Image (tube, rainbow, N blue to C red):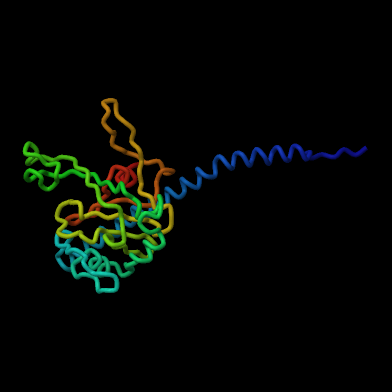
Amino acid sequence: MTKRFGFTLAEVLITLGIIGVVAAMTIPTLISNTNGAQFKTAYKKALSTLNQAVLMNIAMDDTDFSTLKADTASAGQPITTGSMGDLLVNRLQSATDITDSYFEAAGTAGAGAGDPTTLTAMEYKTTVTCTAEGEPAEDCEAADIGNEIEVTVNVAAPADNTWRVYSFADGTSFAYLKAAANCSEINENCVGFIDVNGSAGPNTAIDCSSGAAADGEEEEITECDASKITDIFPVFFHGQTVEPANDSARAVLFGK
């Protein structure tokens, strides 16, 4: 009598079932981590590109963000000379104005959670030196004059009538407030955001929760799990630099 070696149908089905369960548990995490790593790399590259653009502008025109003029051009009109858009077009050959198509693709104001026009919590944290009461930030009090204090800048949700969006050759987008002008120091108008994959989703701002410290104060974020990294990163631009504008964006740039 010949013996046959192999697996029964029940054993095969049980094995496939186990494989399916393990895959269902691990694949979403792997995909999320992969996307997070890609977003992180693209963010760093975009930040470097923007900083190189202003350094080139300094070398060629002896001007930086402190001389910016507000972007007053309407759709279809030539870009305002001396504005952020003018700087980008002159220094980055691939910079293309995609404001209309970006917001149309991402959704219109109030279209629902997830698109950049509904980011009502565009919060930016920075440190400023108080030069006078209320200057350069409302948080500056008489006792703070001459000292550094941390301030939080809240900016209106992105909307196509207040923001201009440019796309670069690698698909990264950069949006800035059209009112940005004279950005020698950080102020509520000298802000923008990098969207590392253009109008493609998830179009949500990076937000790595830090938890609460023992004294009830919020701890500074020093690392950001790859699975929590999304595609929009708020930035400040002032003087000769573009820098991350909140703890989460800084954690992605400087964290391990």
